[in-house]
Length: 357
Image (tube, rainbow, N blue to C red; front, side):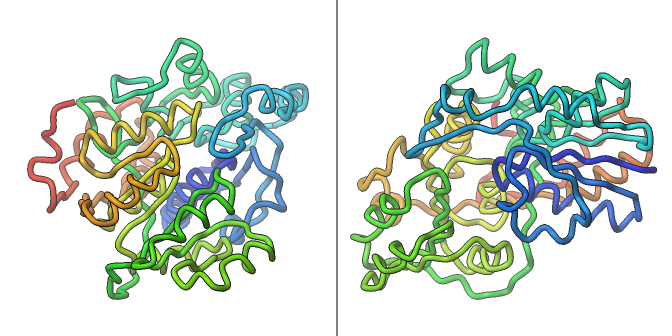
């Protein structure tokens, strides 16, 4: 079986899921080509495991100071190039298309009558799950951005819907947990704002990941509680394993990893982005994290002193998915869903799986 796997690369979460899926696909010796879109090739990092992958402009969004900028987003996206890329992509050599909310592979599959299986968090929003900021326009966007023959949504809880547990790609580091160590990844916020926000909390050590300038490093020279860390998948995983908590935007994948490891979560959803707004609501509904609408000093203090992490251990979803893909009965998803939720272990939340939707 030869597979083309399309991955939305605007954020790192989709790529993280693809890493986990790539391991499982390689173990079964399946032939897979990767296409990433939504970010320039030179902005991607730690990508060697994907081999000679393709990269297209696709669609992305523009943010500033933690908010989506709709007009700037419209100006940035080249819809004519998107149309060309969809029509130029020849899928004749592939037996199956996988897509993680990647529009070029998804729409090319539809035009060429190829079976496409969608695997991703966004597909869960077609069901009755916690939502905030939803409206008819966002519902249409979620439905048609990257359509597929079979859609497998992922979420932290099933909410009574036919969706799968998350793909929590964590590494088995055995480092001792440091109670005052906090990992921070706020990729949509300005670095100066993050540094100023964290500086007063002298009793904690903040390991802040992102792209920083020399001015930023100079600014934290005398801030003994803040360490700036360049983006690195391995370095991030090591710090995640030994930290007590995570402060981040309300993306899905990092929160999934933190929950899987039992780290406490404080999230700031991206303003104007329905997915992240809804994720914040779901985290609070499940008592898996706290949220804040801005870089709120009081929220940080309350979270640092009064919130504890809740662990939910998710099964090996990629291995189960690859076995299901190989089996070939792609319309039958009920047994896959049932099996995976039965394997979820939640030592810190009694009857987690039976929580009301």
